[in-house]
Amino acid sequence: MNEQPSSTRIALKWGLFLGLALIAITLVMYLTDQAGNGWFNLLTLVVMVAFLILAMRDYRTSTGGYMSYGEGFGIGALLSAVGGLLSAAFITFYNVVIDPTIQQRAFEQAREKLEEQGKLSDEQIDQALEFSQKFQSPGFTFIAGVFGTLIFGALLSLIIAAFIRRNKTNPFE
Image (cartoon, rainbow, N blue to C red):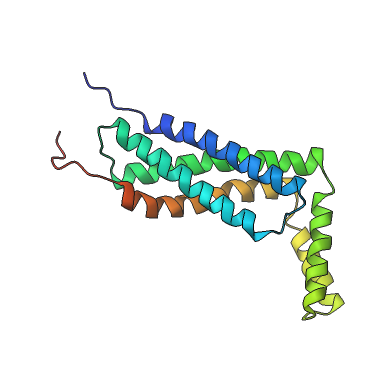
């Protein structure tokens, strides 16, 4: 009997790799004090796209060269959820246990940038930072990290699966 490879197993494997890559990127970003650097966001995007493509191609290869659009999307969504879970857990752990002052430094950098722009008064800057601090609890950071990565990964999966998919000519095979 011809056994169908598990899309879940492939998504979990590549999700673990994605999570480890996101942790490495975050760690380098934190250790070099580059939390506001846009290059790390671009690097994260490139890494996510690469792992989504690798996972979908891995699955397509293991099924004899075929993968439906829905299978590709499912793999990408699960992979993103696993990667987001690992990454968010690390970020929360880092912010709470390893370096609890990192958020305060980020707020100080944000204040400096806002003051340099000169568009807001000191009172408006204080209000903006006070509002954003409400969303910096460890629980909110964790949930936002998981769901943010999941949603972003699912959107990327919709696009990537359209290019990677390859349907069987006879769907009853």
